[in-house]
Length: 218
Image (cartoon, rainbow, N blue to C red; front, side, top):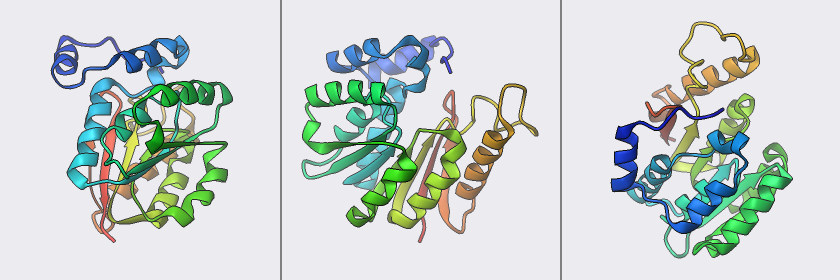
């Protein structure tokens, strides 16, 4: 879904705190226009870096690669011996991700795993437990991805989910026209689970599309 026009406030924040380098600018330009709204914004990339640094994250699983933009942001915040596994399904997007990750300064910290995440996630279990899982993929499957994260995150690990306002639909009492009821229900379940204080210390950051951040308690 296309993003809203960037406000002067967001431009100010980007200039001060979330400058893109030439590689990230080229990556953004190479992404087909119809997918531009799927990519995290620069300020969200910088926020992910901040979370990684604050929590001392060393290992990340990213569900939803797109063209590798968020993977590069996150990997740049990892220590030298840290690693990020990013799971991408679409072959065309994966080709872009391979190109730009390969040209980045953190290519040695990123492994791209191709295929449907529900098939490829089990292959990572032996490498866990992980410090962080970032979910930015098929919205209908968010509860399934959270199941995996709960089983494979260390206590104190981070779950971060993007688009958790579901493009302004999640806060409504019923799914609006154009939003599949199953997807609306799935995102509502995901948000309610993260809000359960027995299991998580969490907050949804009110970005344009909602960014949920949760610390796993047990």
